[in-house]
Length: 348
Image (cartoon, rainbow, N blue to C red; front, side, top):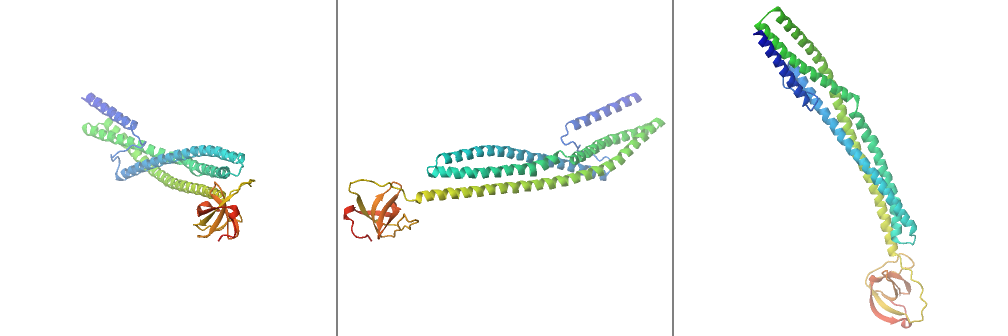
């Protein structure tokens, strides 16, 4: 009968060990979750606190890794941006230098090519900030000793708690055995099991306090550092975009100004050496126009102008009130055609 009891007891122990091995194999946290009260309520609360801290620091570490991966992607894209932008800057500057015929496109290309150099400098500064302010601090903490040491303490406590849980079962089994057969051998084994359980309790109390303090300190540092790096990321990206926007705003204004200057300048018409009679026509101003240079002619609505030349660029040259100059062709309407020999008094 005793032999059967011993065999059954060994079988139960083997099954319990196998169950624990399976639980440990498929556990995803590294800290075993358990609702069993091994010692008392105080120990149970410490166990729950450690489990919470362990999960929190693991989630914080995983989030830090995600931020690092994103910053690495931003940096890689940034270097490609610099490469493409530098090539475009060189192409624009070369086109502007090779086409110095005072055309709007050549001037615009030169302006933009020069501006791209400043844009790529801002991109380079942004990449440096990503490396020094985001990547380096987060990588250091992810692989840092304090985090790993604290988590190892928690894992040691978890293993010790599993051992205590098994030992509590062993004590209960020995107590039952003594009740069944209170011989000296069974009593001695019970006392040994109880002594081991007492030692585990003492070690767990010390280790639990140490692990809780270490994990709590790491969690606070982890939260603080990650938040600071996120703020630095936001501020750095904001500054980068604002500076690039300012550069492009200046470029746009300069290019538009150059275009307006080119379009507003009166055309240069070569002198025509011809014996043929030149035909002029009389036109009435339908819009006011203020001359911006000595080559231009100011007009008021209702003024009559003797138009002498009409350019395909949209400008006309003529005389009004004894003054001559250029004005937009669309600002007058033709009234009468007359030969140059018929011109007499000033037109008002």
